[in-house]
Image 1 (cartoon, rainbow, N blue to C red):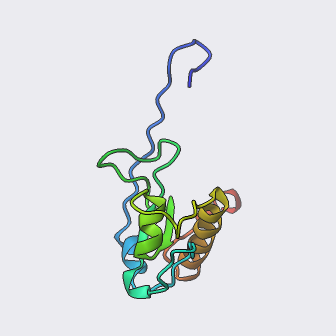
Image 2 (image 1 turned 30 degrees about the horizontal axis):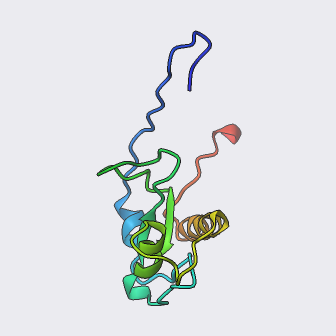
Length: 118
């Protein structure tokens, strides 16, 4: 991406690591629910989405860019396994991320600071 001067502009997001978000996945139902889902809450983790330059080798994206996923669905989106012979769709990731963010908000882990009304 470039700015009006034609020079490349780098976007570096501030680091967001939330142990509370990562720990909250324990015992949760998988939000991806791909055809390969093992439906075992004991294997659920917060699976980061490594798309759109959000993360790289050894670098995780922000801890809001992902979803609750069982070990099998996590393997599928990370490319370690196919989802029951089917590929996942972008809508699967969007739905799962929305569900996860809604759960995090309901649990009080994700807080919204609405500065517009202060």
